[in-house]
Image (tube, rainbow, N blue to C red; front, side, top):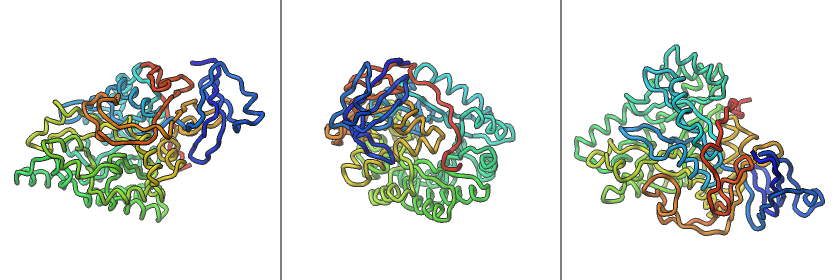
Length: 468
């Protein structure tokens, strides 16, 4: 913990609500004060360490509310550990992740949560929290949900996909939603009709359609939309809020927009891969398409415009990564000859803030909306605001000095994620992280890693702040 003071001088401070040329004073790991640059108040600030942010943005550290470090999947594990994954997140300007602890069928929520605490504790470069994946809804599980909410694990993920692994049927989903309506928890839904998809997978493989591109063809947009609609109506029956993860299809966005127009407490998240990549990537030859296999799958390019529109109209509120990396060599290759055996997931925790800044440059969103969807809203959605997600007195000093003019080319050669390819290889971006503070401690200093495993601490969360 830093006892000295740090002054960030001369930058443009951008939050979800304001842009102001201001100096930021940090003391004891928190934002102590802000004052407009050049004013007597700013000139009265004194500090042991000064960071010159002239010509740069000063933004809150990113909050990535959807990551999967060390996730077991399809006979292998996500290739980023909590140590490598949180270090890469910091390089990309993200200072808080919320990862998913997994309940295995036949086991308690507590066992799953304890397992994930053991993976993360002492290994993280930045702060972290947990959601809980509920794979086995029963009376004991429902009671445990109440206890987890009380101790700061306030969101629960269910799957309408992956029968035999994570899948919950409509009755189990309804019971969990009813419980969350009572205890204040938020149900996060992977909305795809997994039962129908499995039929289409079986039929495709029987026809000899084994290449990665068929992963996208069997996981149809209509089956994402159908499941999204069903999840919304089950939540409505339960009187519960709903957060739909990794929305990829325009038809699913339309379901969310309709529900929100009806005044229902329904929220939607999308991810950079759906905004910047498409089925063209899944169709890349020589099994290269396997690098882009994730669920929900990449969609045809025309879906992108509707996702951007949803972000502008607030029918989608959050951009998270669903970071779940598997190496091409030895992991993605498990699915050669059978697309259904390709581990599902993409690397991206390091790229999100930069890709979304590129969206500002390209005119898709405003600077403040960038900070809103990447920092402030995820912090509010998952009960961490204003400790996280903004720059205001009393907030944790999770601050990024961002150079909006620096140019970079995304590449596996230079990224810090523990994976042998980049989903955005060769993409030119304008804007780059220069310095990152986590609770006032420099984790990245002028493009050098100065953090360490164990700096990041577990962060209990309050309930969704859009429901109070």
